[in-house]
Amino acid sequence: MAKIQMKTPLVEMDGDEMTRIMWQMIKDELLLPYIDLKTEYYDLGLEYRNQTDDQVTIDSAEATKKYGVAVKCATITPNAARMSEYDLKEMWKSPNGTIRAALDGTVFRTPIQVKGIEPCVKNWEQPITLARHAYGDVYKNTEIKVPGPGKAELVFTAEDGTEIREVIHEFDGPGILQGIHNMDRSITSFARACFSYALDTKQDLWFATKDTISKKYDHNFKDIFQEIYEKEYKERFEAAGLEYFYTLIDDAVARVMKTQGGFIWACKNYDGDVMSDMVSSACGSLAMMTSVLVSPDGVYEYEAAHGTVQRHYYKHLEGEETSTNSVATIFAWTGALHKRGELDEIPELAEFADKLERAVLKTIEGGKMTKDLALITSLESVTVLNTLNFIRAVRETMETM
Ligand code: NAP
Ligand code: MG
Image 1: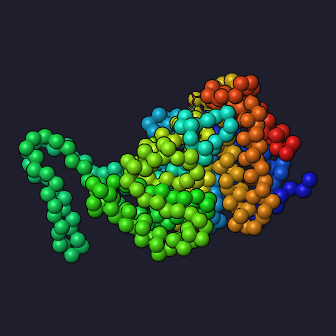
Image 2: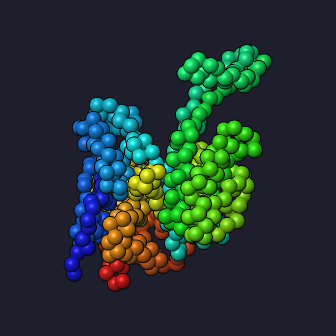
Image 3: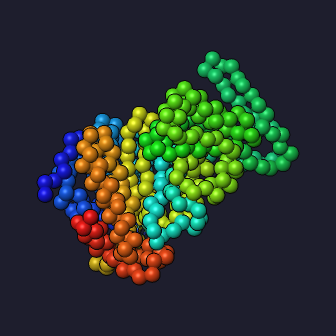
């Protein structure tokens, strides 16, 4: 059979440890036999990042802007232990942080739902996609531990020297203080990314903050979303039969538990951090969670939500068999290939990506899975496969389809 041809290359960002091992297996077993795979390869493995003083990460982000679609393997974010393990020149920044900053993107995370791995919330029939604003608020805060009595004020000094001043609190004893910020520019990008992604995936969009209490800060988020919606997206939403829905965060949390799923839930940075862990844990496993970074001008970077699975990698290095779940990494590839097929008008490529996803789900539903899923499945007869054999089982399923 002739291989599927591509037009524009995908930006391929290789990574570290066990996910790097799976990366190659996925390419060898599931992609290269069927696709004349065109990629522009960037090695984001920690060794090469260190060799290039992290320039390779910056280059890969630039290439993503140029070509529009990237697929990324999980990478190590260096800490003190990694400094000595890899003999690093510097404690390089998180590649995801660097890429996110370059693309000004919003991260969308969706659980991969499959029969046999049911969410704890019984009524969640469709996956809930979490859209987390990735800039500011408590993640870029300034804090003071107040030693004793005194007055705390919030002061803004404009470039021309004029001041805006508000009393925060008159302390009569020790306490704590925190200053946080966000920018209209960032919130606007976040809103656009959410509305575009909702249209792209044909799902309703929910957004929630605490604007009744935070009458300026959170209210600003609400107003910007509403303004962008009305000016730029309302007509397209209505034409597509989609809804944009704003409510209070506590109301959203209560309602989410009662829905059937199948929508996008946009959250401020902290809410998104907390709620995405809740949704993913309720759906079984981090290895069953896709993640895509979408920039406001329509650039996409697909990856798995989990890390490099370090513990399994050390077993692998000792020659021990591992049963590492490759589903999220496979879905990173299929997400990117599907998008490339769509943008370049290569229907075979998009269809291949869909078929590979169905083959993954069918393999698991047929009882063949990795250990992490075997531990939580409701299926009765299960075969636990090792890392490579699971990928080969997916290939067999795909061959029969
Ligand atoms: P992790 O790689 O997500 O793994 C944590 C644990 O979750 C594993 O030990 C394993 O549990 C389970 N797990 C995760 N993915 C799995 C999979 N595909 N199949 C089976 N089990 C899976 O997180 P980590 O160990 O905290 O971090 C390792 C490295 O990844 C760190 O250097 C961190 O910087 C990096 N990281 C990268 C990204 C990214 O690039 N997006 C994200 C997070 C972390 P058991 O050991 O119990 O089997
Ligand atoms: Mg978290």
